[in-house]
Image (tube, rainbow, N blue to C red; front, side):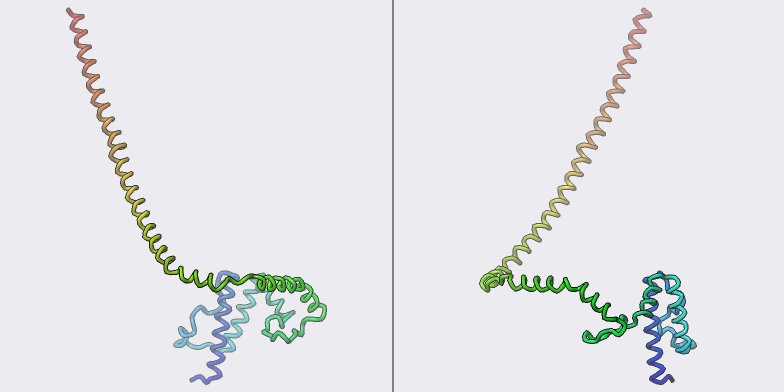
Length: 212
């Protein structure tokens, strides 16, 4: 049975693996090099020692830095300025930053102070509406709610009327336009047949007259 130290170390490595998986997926689009199984899925298997898992994490991080330029630049930045990745209290100055660096940071943000001060002053100048106005608006809330209910009902009615109008238009088009076209086509066919019969009769009559 594992002692509390082993459990703590294993949990810490599990968290590191999860973070590395997320970072590798965001930067490289895959999660190769480390186990994809959650910690509970490995309980019944042969457990890998913590030291070996740490070595695997280090190798995976090296492979990630070789594939991703962003990861390599972040690691280089961590090597040069490790204080940037530590949560220091505001009153504590990072040891890696010199006086010139601190001065450049302060000067780059110097224009923000008067801007923030002017905005705060403008907020103080904004008039607060009288209490009577706010009370009257609150008193109107029930009427506004009723009007919203009426508007919703009207919207539903308009949707229903639009649907019914569409159905009527489709029915009119189907009966009047398409049906009328079919009727005209049938009449034209009949008239053409009658004309052919009349021509045949006239041809036969002319032939009979010529014989006589």
